Length: 68
Image 1 (cartoon, rainbow, N blue to C red):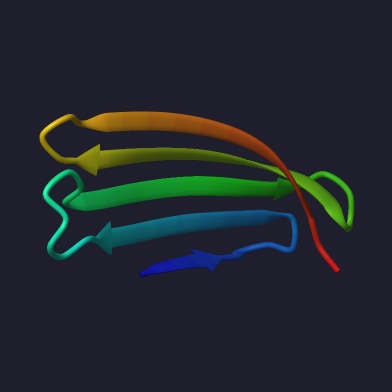
Image 2: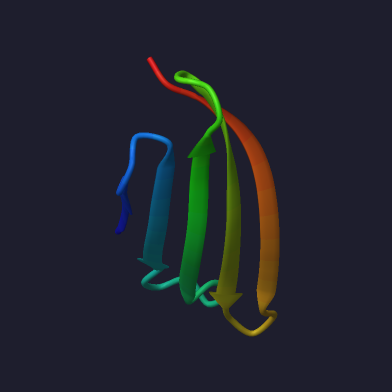
C-alpha cells in the first residue's frame, strides 16, 4: 500500500507500507519519499526505506522521474 500527495504542482510527498505473508526472509517494508519537479515534466525523487526482517535492510535512493 502506498500513496503520494502533491500539495503543490512541483512537490510531492510519498509514504508506503508492504507486508509479505509466508516469506521467512522478508516481513515488513516502510518507505517515505519526496518528489520535486524543477521543470514542468522533469524532476527527481529522494526516497528512504527500511525492511524489518531477520536481516534489516535500509536503503536511500535518488531517481530521475518524468511526468506525461
